[in-house]
Length: 437
Image (cartoon, rainbow, N blue to C red):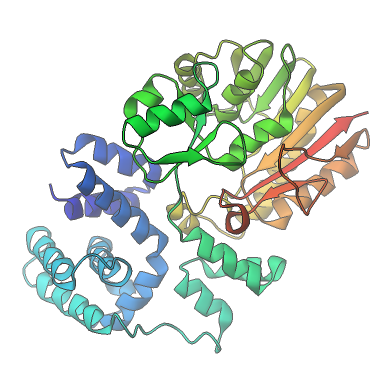
């Protein structure tokens, strides 16, 4: 199977079966016999098309003889595949992008469809240096939505909450290809040793410069033995920073609510030198098994998994530290999860903000006097960050906000910490902390 055919198959799986790209793409690649270069092309095509879907559909609508709304999903994905190569990939010749798409149309669709595909893509090729985007000055929200390929409601929200300049900077950041970050597992190795091992295997890597264990890879290729042997965990720098905000000490007790798949819980164990107690709570039993598997691989021995609903009363002790890494809209991870921008709805934000408050109020019961409650979300909306924190403080007078401290970092929004994709080159992450009086 060619790289383009496999990419089209993955896109159809995501479109028709609502599969998640970060699951569907790796699964398809693991079963293929493509070489490294072609696997890289599949990843580029799938994620690039998902990232630019709205922009591609706008252009196809201009180039095609019938509206996008009347093009069947599989055929639309084939057109997206061709137009993406023509518009966004400079290294692929136009004749190759057009020819390969026409051949796929011949093999996978009824006779005559290839003529339609050929006509659309040739028009796209002719127009690639003068693309018919909306006029920026006519309706800014519409232009930004189409050009940067984000839902219009989200663009409007960011403009309202952050202003045009910051909103556009976020849109630009979301459309950049994100780099893979590893957290060196200091229970088995150390960052310099892992860096040298990566370089010996031909992987271009460097220290992230934010958290000591964070290592950034130049490409997407991760040597399988690095992960399988438990030398590292794939985790964004902003997520690693949450562990440094909590900063659990050896011998302490910690509860991690909404813990699966275990990135933060295993990091706590790492920071604690495997001495103490970490209780990982999650509502999903199958995802808790991922936590257990990650613990075994990483050599973590102090994490206990508890299946439970974080909004309900649970038989858990009072502990030194509680983390609520809450479910959220995930508006800070749209670069890594480009398909998620098309799954989100404006009405999700107040619903999730209410859930976050419910979990925080419940989690607070398990913090010892003098202990710390940490709240983190990988989102950007005011309702899920400042709004949730404000409502929590109003309902819990015995919890006082404390400045979030992460070594080497200062934050303009102190006492809270916020990582911004366009400023820090990380996921978007909001962190707040409270001491129980």
